[in-house]
Image 1 (tube, rainbow, N blue to C red):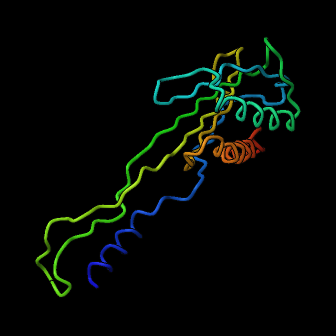
Image 2 (image 1 turned 30 degrees about the vertical axis):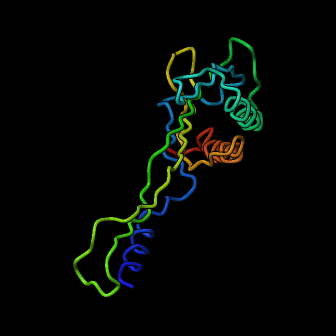
Length: 181
């Protein structure tokens, strides 16, 4: 019984964090956001197992579509070159091991003397990070940037909804409202 309680307590301590978090939103000092009318895309970069891939077909379309929707709703129009803003996006995906339980062998009434671990239960958690940077090409400085993280599912295409929600959450803060820091 004591073993079951210990294993259950250990499982509660290692539950994954909430699914989605906006980590940072940052604005360039003294930037006049009302002057931005157009934007152009830089290649969407995704870091995966094989290194950095530009315009990865599994990531770039959902990112571009979502950001296009957000910027269009804010009154900006896409152009192929010479935009008032340049959109730079980096997507990262990483997996980290998680230990969920250790089962020790021993008699049911043992109070102290456990044998060695009989088995362990674990899994890999996938987490994604999305960084969006809107660059003012006139100054070559960031006008606005945001970073969000989210837990991911390993099924192909299952992360698109989370990407869209993360981008929606980011763009709630673009352009900054008066008094926002």
